[in-house]
Amino acid sequence: MKLIFDVSVLAWSVRSNKAKTGIFRVIENLLFQFLNDQDIDLYLSSIHGNFNDLKEYLKNNKINLPSTHLFVPQSSNRFKDKLFQTYLWIYQLLDRKNSPRFFSTFFVFLYICLSHPVLVLFGLYRYLYPIPKDYLSRQFVFHSTFLPIPKYIQNSKARKVITIYDLISIKYPEFFVGNKDDVVWKLIRNLTPDTNIITISEHSKADLLDSNLGLSDQQITVTPLAASSCFYRVDSQTKLENDLSQFGLNYGDYVLSVSTLEPRKNLKSTIRAFLQLPSLKKNPKLKLVLLGGRGWGDSLEEIAGEYPGIFQERIVFLGFVPDEKLASIYSGAKFFVYLSFYEGFGLPPLEAMQCGLPVLVSNVSSLPEVVGDSGLYADPYDLSSIVTAMEKMIGGNEFRFSLSLRALERAKNFSWEETARLTKKAYINSNENSF
Image 1: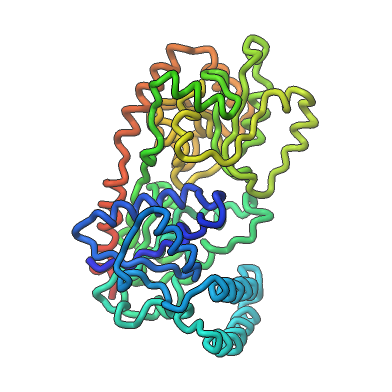
Image 2: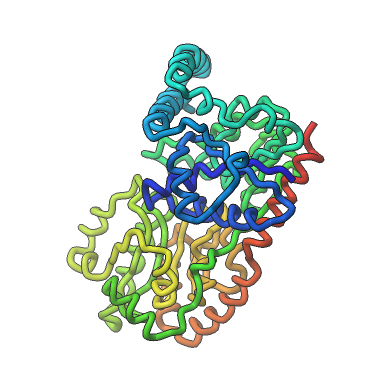
């Protein structure tokens, strides 16, 4: 199987750790699976044009592919990368969801007519068309793991597969106020009958089928995710103490939550519920520790004003933590809480479960698919439900121990080997469903 696998997202991580999101982990783990798969003749692309960052990512991860299997222009350099990304940035400004369709189409067409000769003049022809036509035949599968497929690939004979992780930004745009990313909208707008879709939960598949996009059940393949190997239960007390001390934490003295600070993640309710816990008086050292980037939309100044003093004392923002320390951060927590309003899958709870951590999650969207009967649920829209569930977790040592054992067993049902196997199934389907 000849596979062109787009890894633009992995190259972004060279510039910023903020790019190491759940989507980053999905793409990276699939890449590692395919690199060792004898059935796959693997080619890598970066349709975002960040070629030098891609080369640096591959070098940092000791990934060596023949030059014929890496679609990077020979004359690429950082100046050309920057110039091409400026071109893409302007293109995206013109091609907006809320722009009148006629004007958007006209200005995009005009922009292409004016800009492409300039890009060619600066030696960027291969940036516009990095994958030669010979590699866009029916023998090849092109998998866009995040970004919309460029027109020249879309119009080619190559079999097309895209990953749509969820439809949250389409179904619930109120969660994305302040975030002008139209990636999912463009993916849906550009769908063609011969494009096969990968999504990451049965719930997301149902959303796609219910969205009047004209999709068939056979066109969509569900590939549940898995937790990375850097998530495991740390049994060494010495390692736990050493790692946790670097972050000013003590074993069992904190509740953990992981997410980008954005409206959909419902961190405001998580924080409010925690600060309202009656048992805080009996647990003077207990803190709520938050991992993840700042994101957009939500400001926590309002909550800080509601709970002066105790907010600063009890809420800890760790931000980005290196992968090699994550297992200890998870393993040292009393329990894990994830009360998102909506998820396409819900990777953080699974990562916590693989570390043997009891989990408290929302009872909505795909989270019950992931957690099953191995966790405790709460209504993310009901603060009293969250407080009650947190109290049950804090006060029940035997209950937490029982959930911990069940979490470890449940996590064994998910593996990247299985995710890769199902992804390959989507590639096979692309041959059967294309016409």
